[in-house]
Length: 524
Ligand SMILES: Cc1cc2nc3c(=O)[nH]c(=O)nc-3n(C[C@H](O)[C@H](O)[C@H](O)COP(=O)(O)OP(=O)(O)OC[C@H]3O[C@@H](n4cnc5c(N)ncnc54)[C@H](O)[C@@H]3O)c2cc1C
Image (tube, rainbow, N blue to C red; front, side, top):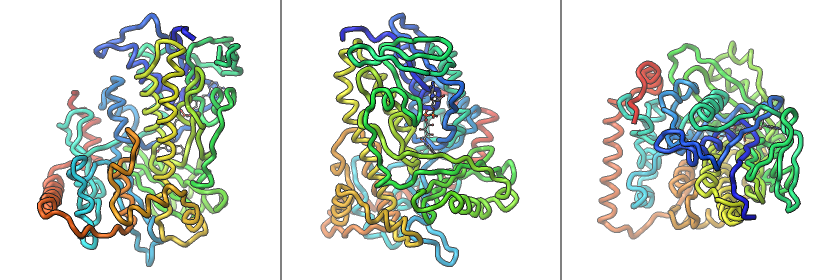
């Protein structure tokens, strides 16, 4: 038990594997931006040449900016190598109602917090204005600007800084390649392309070694399972129970396609578009050279043929028949759920190996970043220390999963759609804790006190954007203090003024990406 942790083996070279390798290596093998090899720590990533990566995952959170900066990747290089663009939030189309007479509606969940946050919760002051202005437009300069296709910064704004908070849309395959190159060339990570064909246990139940087809047995002190949905080490070998979530979030299939632009200078959407369908939703992600489009649906409510036909129709509407007629979608099977713990004995699962839920708020990579940062920052010196940090990490991991599931469910249960039993089934399966929250939010707006655990993934503001975007009704606050009403009024006005000023100055997403390709962003 007092054995030192000197050798870390990561199984899997998808985005989870390489991000984890980079985050741990940047924390332990780099000093002041330079490789500072630690003779006491070796990080080896083993990936199978036979098993391909999942190859999707094109939307990230703003946390990815901190991650890329921390692991030492230049943002200009990232944009150029990964066919990347800006993501400023998610735009939910037709979620509240089926479009009538061809008229769609939408709301935005932007990444920028409401004006005044975190010290001042402006939400109660907006309630009186709900008939004249949407919540997102009233409290966030990002709403109108991103929907209009403006970039979140200027070409003179340094790398990773912003005017409006942003994450990325990217090509998942190119991103993995960049991470791999960076890990091998700059971060001292070692790499082995070989298939893991067996796992050996130690007498105490720990994992002693993996067995590879061509390089035999590889022992380690800590194993990180990034083997994707099959969860080779944590799920299959250690038999950590899997908690299925299909009874709450029904979507278990996706059809993904790549859609070309009509011309190379076509506008690029600044938000992920998520358009509700009869039994699921369609994502639409704008990259510089193409769109990534996919239909996520419930196989219990919709056949694959019907799902394809809805995806086809969407592409016809947004790109025309010529493009839609040659689509060849890739089908992905999703097993919604997560393992009860992520860190057990000397093995931690990160990414799809730990769990996965439909990508409605693109939380998967954010959870990968969180998990990798946890083990990197709390990496114990000895095996005994691992058990001590495991309890803490597992507790936060569970809280994150519970919040993700409840927050995603919120998107469905507020819908008034009735075009398929799918939506009714969602409204009929609201978990009790979410029911209780919804009752509370009829009386008072979501605030930080509603979420009692630290470092939650979705702050109160995210709930406000979704609830009020979906026309949820919270009772008016009759006794707001006049001084605070004035303060709120000033903030609303400042927000509106910033929008009109920035409208005149910010480049469009396409313009800024062209400039980044040509000149680069100022380094920090
Ligand atoms: C439809 C869909 C849309 C998504 N959209 C988003 C999104 O917008 N945003 C987001 O954050 N996430 C999204 N995700 C999730 C995201 O794709 C994954 O979280 C991310 O790609 C990480 O995957 P991974 O590395 O865990 O697994 P994988 O990419 O599956 O990688 C598994 C790795 O394990 C290796 N491996 C497997 N078996 C063996 C073996 N026996 N020996 C050695 N190596 C082995 C494979 O070779 C591979 O390298 C989406 C997922 C789906 C299904």
